[in-house]
Length: 368
Image 1 (cartoon, rainbow, N blue to C red):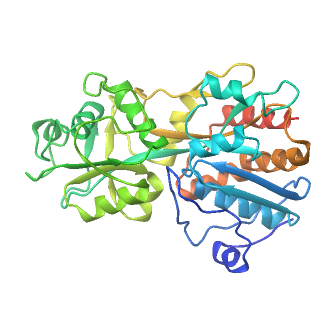
Image 2 (cartoon, rainbow, N blue to C red):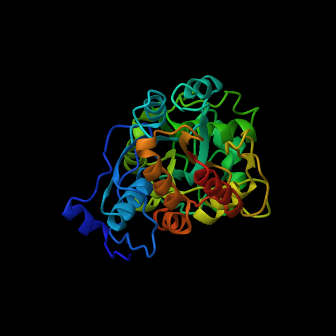
Image 3 (tube, rainbow, N blue to C red):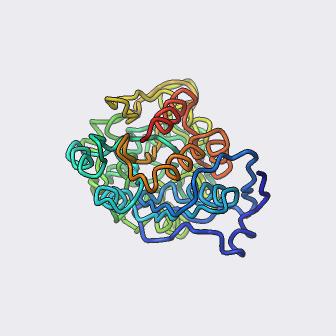
């Protein structure tokens, strides 16, 4: 069935069932021209599906939920973007069919999942959506800025304090860098975005960034704001500011972003294509069919953007609740399918690479 709907029409009709909530990686605001048309979408059994977790994937979930429901009228999918930690806890408590998480489950959380997944099942990671984390800045007169990992680490650790610092000037010989203070902004709340950004700094510049990656900020100095939207506001309002947030925020708010000197022949920009290239290089490190990924944050490959966030759907490999198994499997099959992955490019997310997403599809088909 083909249903031609756009975001405004769906909102007006009340068909939107993505439940908004406060989360660690709030991401909101879709372009008005998002089209929910899909031809031949395979619907599962009707009913209601509850899920929660990562709010970094909220825009993707909004498109996926509305597309699925527009084509499968007997189904209602409620996804609450409460943040990765809260979503995982709700899944482990058995109150949701699956969870979205920007970080891998711990061993203890996987062990705990055996009490929720029946018949000897356990939680598995299904990488479903990726997104470039842009480094955004407010520097009038400088609309093309290159930085490397060491310089970024020193900036965010308050070691480099002015924009005309020799380390920045060396990377930008043609730029007219002003002698104004740098104001780095980081997340005040625990965040998967912070976890991934600091993973990049620690892997690529361990001497300049000795702190272990964490959802909580570990660097010295700087200022903070709540959520990605809070960081956007701080960058917009403060000349000399620099911060990090999902690429969609930078594009929606027309904020300049940094090109990263990774050691490749050309600096790499934060784009969907360059982020997809990073996912293609990832190694699958999960065991027993689990699809947890390990990213190469220190890559020097051409056209590979190194600061990428992957969101996993966390579900039981077997022993799912029989009452929701069919709908869970059908909805996740759509999100991992060609139509679901194609929709990501239109809203600044990066689809999962072909070889990995095919394994995701196989794991979804095998869910019982």
